[in-house]
Image (tube, rainbow, N blue to C red; front, side):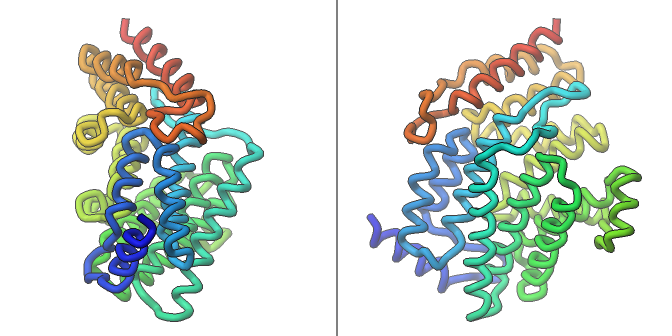
Length: 318
């Protein structure tokens, strides 16, 4: 098994094609587990990737992705009639997550010291983006800005080297959209900190490219785009059209089901919203020891959160 992974990652490293990343089948299986609502099941797979090729950032980036979705689900709550991970305080295991994100950046930078490639700049940008997510969850705006600007810099360099790199386009698009929709207070902070501006219309087009053509960020950018249209533009129909393919491909992911239900509720489609919320409640739970449960659909913290939120939404429909 290890030799198969090594061979696949060697091919991945040597066969980079213009316009996108290539990843081994084991990485795709791990991503499918993450986006199917089983990040714990993905962790043994990504650690095998790390063992097979410790000098490549892919395995570390995917472990960071798996850990992020666990934290995101555990922080979900309803505010302003919208479900999202709005803000929470620091937690003890945050530091291990941030160290892993740093490792993604450092491993990618070590490869860049040998050869300046679009692929490694994308991975470095992903490491910074993992950090920005955590800082955003904790409401640390200055740290978000620092990490976000660094992610943007890496993605822009990737596009200089390969203008067709869809994952880099997605990363820049997310930056452009969010910075252009910042509140006046944050915009003032952006001015004093010298943070590059954004372009909302351009960001939308870039996110569309990322969600349709990306490799590593395809699901992420589709989810982020749908949430953003809901939260910042109140374009519920368009947001739902973007979110529905996530539910179709990953029907066991309760986070995607909650989002689809939320959007239908905003559109007054209570019967359809109820279907999504009931579907979220029916997904099998994992064991109490999520880290040891490779087949869990959801760990208990996520189960409890999803159950409470789905029931709250259902009660609000009546």
